[in-house]
Image (cartoon, helix red, strand yellow):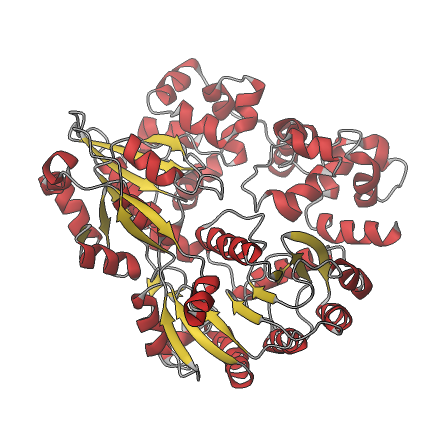
Length: 634
């Protein structure tokens, strides 16, 4: 029990605001109890809030599955909820606490907002934007404008996508010193005076400004790793006792996460590989870091490793315990088929992988280049997460200005040892990925192969006459920086009132305050064609798949082509550009300026379905390593 509490406090400690907790609940402060321990053991059960930004009851009400599971809601949010895209709900006590602190600090009362101020603010206040970004306001049924004018601006909440409180106050210290309402000040006089409402230095500048050193990210991951419950080697040996092959045939995979629990293109592909080996009656051992890990590990001191055995989770083990458990479990296995595939080395060390493979009685296997982990800690080859670097020679000046530079030598050294001790065939999901790997690596592979994750095959469906209307331009997938979302966002804003265009986002999570349609789409193992079907159903004319990084495959590009949508991409998108260019599936433009110019002139309209009459396709998916083994056997 004490150990469990210690692990809980490691995670909760940095997040619980004891000053807020003590001020909000003076009954506890008077007892002299340790406030952090109190929240961890009893406070959350009593509905007390640990910090201004987190409501215990609000989180449980929003996510009833957490409430049913009986977990401490703050611990759940920190350990897994935020990685799952769940959102924290601010405490209802936050306003009083923050106002009290402000008054104590400033020694003065706030200047009231007049009816005239409210009417002026209403002319440009974006209520939908505000409510989406502040679900606590929506849940409380408060008027969003009143909330912003009275409280929200003091808490740093922006009134629209075109006004930044932080920027305005930083650029105008006289306004900050006066304590006046910044948004009202801008509308009433700041704009006339030429003051800037929001700095528009481009999304790359903003991304660099938000960059966190890799050391800080690694430190966070170490905290999560210490909180993982570890199992002893004996439990691993017991779990591996059940065999569907009669202890003869075994396939081992290494990856960066639990493919059975995480949705994604690579994860879905590994699921298909696992399913195919199950059909062949071969046992399957999958090893992955039990909590996210951003770089390779070294020796046997890496993060805890999760284990799946024939699709069943056996637990998490320290690397030495994993090795010990495997030695015991596989000692009496007879001769038979052995294979392995390395899908990612993130969270793994070369020693761990070599030991596991040799204990299993294997030597030759596949190394997949789903990303470029073997070339750099920046697995997408994006310098500082914003610009393609092309994997320059190690130690080059370009590496010296990149946050991943200090860890590049570690990645190369671990992979050099791996390739020296194992007979590895490098398999790339595209020729573009293989070309990049060959140009940037001198690793000694026994062979190289290209095996796409999917291919287009003629479909049974026939195109239907497109519905008349504006050009339908879509962004399919996760709205992330390296997928080019900021470019699409700016495009939608620029041409918001242009009747020639409609902008749509097809993905799991909607984005607030933008002039576009959102359609919830999420491809899963059970619905692998969900994105293709949505693109087809919505009659998307063209899809923007503008990755900033060298995509090694991009299932989204294949889904768009299969649905009859033209692909619009940039020059640094790797296999997206190659697939688009070689198959005649759309346009590869030289830069973002060319994209905006095509919308300005209307030239983009030549990609409309009505003009192209595109064919429709089905997708045939690969079983990855299982297909390669079957091909070799044949």
